[in-house]
Image (cartoon, rainbow, N blue to C red):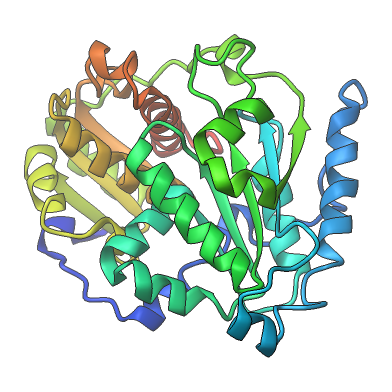
Length: 344
């Protein structure tokens, strides 16, 4: 038998120290390294990216900004950051996590959304103060679909660079946007403006997920079969069982920076009566939860609509489409793992 829990009864309280402790690669990338990355021989830019990151990594810890430079505001002579530009599935996160593992601490690793959520939870100034003593800050999945967040992160990274912190970032482009689907340096300079000269942009070529399409979502499980399937799939584990509508309401009262703690200790998820989300605000919160579930490799059993119908057509074609495509892909993988034991 599975032990039943409910996410809708959890309201985690998290200290600043606990929040910062969560800024490390997910278990999927907990033991990766440059040696475990396998560049495609047909894509020489992948091997070149490994060399570029290894070279960049050798500079971390060499100087974190002298006392005098911080007092008088002088800036380091070398670039503070490196920016990996490429499509989905070419190994950018693997390489970014490899850099994090190889670098001396203190250091932080998180997604773009996690850093914006950190600012929302702590305030901008407290976030700068907390991270300014770090040697390396890694930002995965830098997103350009929200000008406000882009300006916020631009300012944050600029202040960290001025404090002597080394920066490393990755980016995916929006599906169907920016021509070939590559985030060109000229676009980076336009969007990030004054921060652009802090980064060396490294392009990584490879097959883009838009050419592969989204995987087919498994058929939902009838609601009356969920309990028996749950006990069969998660025998001995702790399973979060929630009505989907109630969960969506509950997420509005939990800051996204705490979603990692919200699912702490959960071995599986069961959602009853999943429906298409029509509110953008609700959808964006749910995307964060989907990312945290994927990070922790939490299998899903669900009834209701299949995950490829989770967001409205307008959402899947709008300004946040990259977030929704990613969420559908990840939730589908977790549902397959829950139903058929396919690795996600």
